[in-house]
View 1 (cartoon, one colour):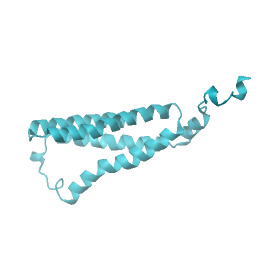
View 2 (tube, one colour; view 1 turned 90 degrees about the vertical axis):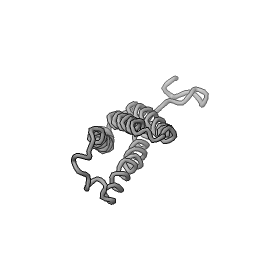
View 3 (cartoon, helix red, strand yellow; view 1 turned 30 degrees about the vertical axis):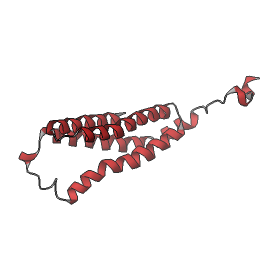
Length: 147
């Protein structure tokens, strides 16, 4: 949940920057929101399923957000470092929004890493083993315990 909150905060900062730059960025904002909002909603829904003990949700979050999501968060900063854009920046060039975005990104990455690790510690494994399996409808036949 912390990772999603950090992602939402980053999105708000990014939209704010695009609006402030007023570089006719309506299309860019719309595309960014069209991608990010469904991802955030899906992540929350899958996290809620995981909390209910659904093992598939744990795997989906680990692969989807722990691998794909993490890569998407790290590609841009790594490219910027490779191009020397961040390292050569003078302190006077750094704005408050840059610091807020950087702090949020660090929190976001740390939250994803912590979540992925915590999803697979022994206590979590026990939790998923102890959760009852979902019951099938009675249309497939009665359950033995219903007799």
